Figure 1 (cartoon, rainbow, N blue to C red):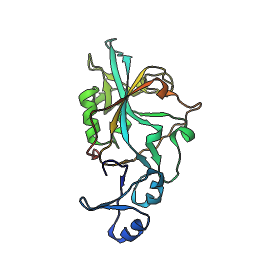
Figure 2: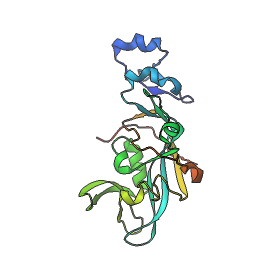
Figure 3: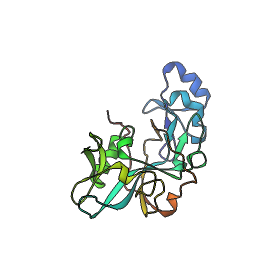
Figure 4: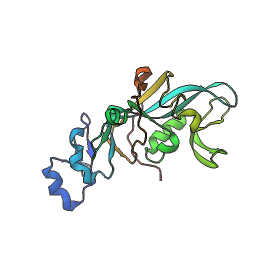
Length: 222
C-alpha cells in the first residue's frame, strides 16, 4: 500500500459483501476496507462520510507581508490544496474547471476545524501560527502572527478576495510546502464556497517545495 493511493473506508460488518463486490480491498494487518483508485472513489461514497477527499499531499502556502504594528516583513501562511489533489466524491466536480481555482488557500481559522492536529503542530513550529485573540472579532482563533513583534495578522489583511498576500488575486511570489499523506488519502469536512472568474493563476507564481515532513496521523482536533 505504500506505493499506491488508497482511501480508508468506514464499512460496517453488514456491508462487507457489498463493498467487496465493488472491488474494495481488505487490509489484513490493520483490519479495514479501502479503495485504491481516486477515479472511482464515488462508488464508495456511502462509506466515506464526506464529499471531499484530499489525495497525494496537503500543503502550506506562504508569502511575505508588512506587519501592521512593527512595519517589518513577516511570513504569513494558510493551508494550500492544488486543484488536482482535491476530489469531489459524489458531485464529481473539478476545483479548476468548476470553481476556477488552481490553488485553494484556506485560512488557518477555517482549516483548524478539519485538518489533522499533526499539521497544525507543524505550522505552529515553522510558520508563526498560534491561537491568538482578536479584538476586531472578539474571539480567539488560529492565526498568523508577526515573526518580529508577535502581533496578530488579521485574516482580512492576509487572505481577502482582492490582492492580499494570500488573496484569490494575489500576484506575490508564493511558496507551497507540499506535505505527503502517508496514511492514504484524507477525507475532509470542507467544500469551496468561492468561485473565481476568471480562473485564478496562483500556481504560475508559486514555488512548490516537496517537504521532508509527512503526515502520518490524521487525528482531527476536538
